Image (tube, rainbow, N blue to C red; front, side, top):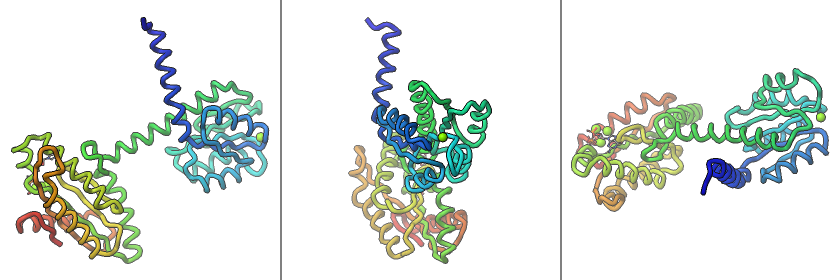
Length: 314
Ligand code: GH3
Ligand code: MG
Ligand code: MG
Ligand code: MG
Ligand code: MG
């Protein structure tokens, strides 16, 4: 029979096994001026299937990071020519967010203050040489866990749970950046507000679950029709697209294709076979802030609704 200890051991083993394929995705940069130490740490990492990069000092490390910006963890020695490990930490923190890179300082010196100095310079963790491999793996793995958790939370904070589309927060954050770039280049920005017609009726006639399925199905259409643009579910049955292309003719054609596709195919998109259409309000303007752009698009959306729905107004 399964004892509590057995079960714990089994779950631990399962976790360890699950960990292997993850490590293959994790990129670790080893910075040390001693070739022997670089080899030792690299072989520990390779044994657990991490992707390994090496650098002989801080300057080389910064070059490697510049060429491989997706490196996740930096393990660095302190005593090195040209740049000390602490200085490297501070420089990495100046250049990269501590949300997507973890730093572990390593040193063999007998300086009692070094661990604190490493941490103050932006390191997440510290190991004294010589270290026990188990401790090394545990500290590394906990730092990777932390990076993964941050990535998960960030993804969730930016995603609408029902449709899995980017959400309002994501849209506003990125829209202002895109508008700033466009207006600096004296280029207009095109925004479309898209609203499902008579959606309340769908809920009333077919139930809230059916309404949810309609929202999910239209979400998948956004990924197909506007994959190069910034789109989001702003709330309820309302969506926005901010176009990356400056060609308003192309953008309008894309919107018209989308509207027509739903008019023709919407009933086959859900198991409930509910036909639905959308109304779209469009604005094309050289402007730096998103709020007035949304206001005009909303007014045009209202016009599209008033003029009989299932159409685009600009
Ligand atoms: P119009 O053509 O003028 O846009 O009419 P409408 O019925 O689509 O618009 P209205 O604003 O009156 O109703 C929107 C409805 O959307 C009301 C609300 O219950 C429903 N709704 C909002 N969010 C969700 C959701 O996540 N799931 C479901 N099923 N319904 C939702
Ligand atoms: Mg050294
Ligand atoms: Mg409405
Ligand atoms: Mg509506
Ligand atoms: Mg609405």
